[in-house]
Length: 435
Ligand code: GDP
Image (tube, rainbow, N blue to C red):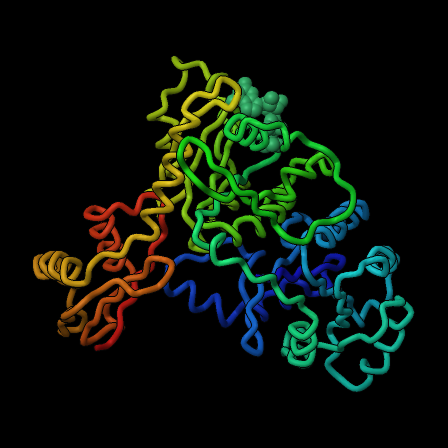
């Protein structure tokens, strides 16, 4: 997917605009997973073209008195990582010094930049908007994020200027694609170095920007796979700050581009909200996930056992807890092969196709013994179920009254599927449909 970043100073209406873009799709996704999480990243679609949207402001807390430097970094990162940028300004406030700063950065960018003047909800303000020509970004769009007026024209233009994505070659397509994601200093590059045995990942500050996640093909220990090289690993020297925004932003493209994401955490720091957000990013994209607790060599074994540590992580990743968690050390190379094996295994599990008759027989027997609860005296009957022929595991259950099958029962079905088939590390979707 193309990535679109929304930038602008605080309070110009970025999150309202963001919500408007993702609303329709999120509603669908939420009804599937039953959970709503990261509110700063979502998928959108316009005129049949899909793209991911990031609200850069959403990652910064207390955004009212935010430093100018902060905004600057935010915009620079958006410029690095996104394919197109929507710069939001506020007609009520007019051009502020911060807007000028942002515009200065954006004028140098070769990627598409769309200037959107927000809060234009009457003819008077249409006139006021003219001053924004002074930002030197050319044509602007007037919108009213609240009512949605004007967003259609903006989106028409946006999908028009989004770059065409390169086709992935068929052969490369067939190989598993893995990425290693996590906070700065979790040990991602050390892990990759140890695994690959080359020093190509040694951090260098590569000048310029690389738009695409780059696949590198490897054949190690009998496994053939593509490792998605993330900008975050290669260019970490540029941004040292351990801010949530950076690691999340830098993970998005790699995650979207992969089949299985290796989420690396630093054992000495624990599983924190930033790790959680990267985890959700992978889950939301329905990617396979393996969690590696790195630097295990540094943990005093009598203070914390792997079991306790594992339990703590599983608590943080509810409800999708069926995920492999391994304790490794990139330094001593402990369990690195196991980590690779597990990742390959998750890839295979994600691809498996359960034969319809087997699935149907097994699940219907369970459903017969534990049917969905009757609602208002009405009985729900599930008569048939199967795995859909989709690239990501999806299961459909046909029922007479699908709307009466609620989230807890869907979870129950999911658990039963997981008990019988190995979907460890693989998000699955359950649909209930009318036959
Ligand atoms: P990245 O930012 O996630 O790529 O992290 P790096 O691979 O650059 O590692 C950050 C620091 O942690 C470096 O100083 C590494 O030497 C150190 N480190 C990485 N893995 C381990 C490990 O398993 N054990 C110990 N003790 N240190 C590690």
